[in-house]
Image 1 (cartoon, rainbow, N blue to C red):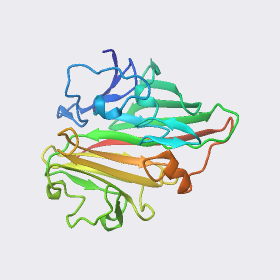
Image 2: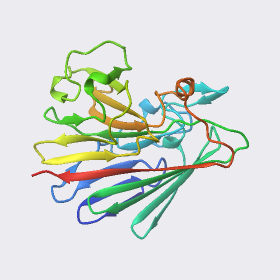
Image 3: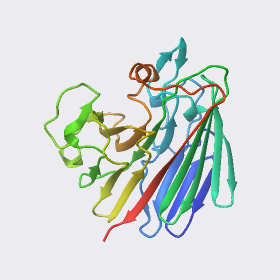
Image 4: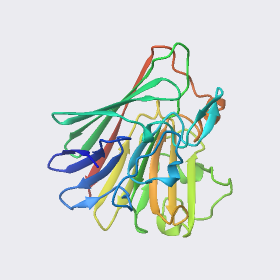
Length: 280
């Protein structure tokens, strides 16, 4: 499978070129530490449009767009985890940047992502353009699956007491920021129930002495999801820190919850950073 790499003295990043533009590896080079949950198979199976995401590789970073979960929007069927993970992308490496673009097949929205490295920061600049002739909604969620061990701790951009359990609505007695307290053989999903109080979230790796931090624009992404699986999905152990422009997980539901549309010909842009910090 063909891939494209970016690297500097701190970080190496690798993404798939053949389809999906999935980021498959982010490494701290000094410590030779891999942050992203890895594909369990030797190869990446190429999906068809409208495939079931769970039947394919569930690792690395995908861009969920224009929905996360399968749904119906304005009579249009939107596939599981959106259009982009199974799509063909145009990827071009120019100097120290990777520019990737594709079209959202279901809603005629152009999606563009530019990745560059600056020291210990991965800078991700996004653009969405409505190429249709009527307003349309979209849901974007950064779906980046990270490795973790039980000693890791999550730092959320809201109080853990304001976390809304969107899996089954019940209250958990354990501290959701401490991975050691989650029961095994389960999976969990939370969103903020109140406004975000900052524009950063992170996962701390104490033994490695590293912090994986997301920096995002919480005015444009006012919702933040936390996905944890401890053996409950495909036997995997991973988590995802998920800034999102809507609430939650289906475009249909997000529209009912007040998501604003993008007009014909309009462009929306935002920036997100992944920052790798070496702790003392």
